[in-house]
Image (cartoon, rainbow, N blue to C red):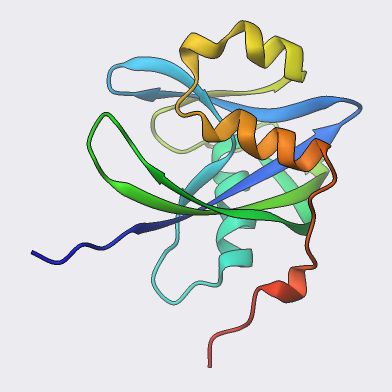
Length: 148
């Protein structure tokens, strides 16, 4: 059996102290997560982050940096995910955008509001990525090299 981590992307999008989150169905219950998803074949990490944010929230964003690369093994299924988390700024909201299946709605929440909903987090990566962002951990987008 070959072990392979799942490559995912996520975005931290802040607007005046509120963070763009996604309320979605996972395992039959509503959970909160950053806009996030899997890398598609022949897609760059940057393109995947922009695409996933639009598909899950209806927001066009501009990426401004890389917050970090995280390794997380989900206790629910034992799958290991490698998450590349980007910072971005909101540009334009498409109110009538058809969101991905399983997405309930986008939500703008402060860090304190997120803490109040801890029981509904999809994973602990939510607060770790936000706290890393708030502490100023940011790398240039040049960290992400194009494929050859």
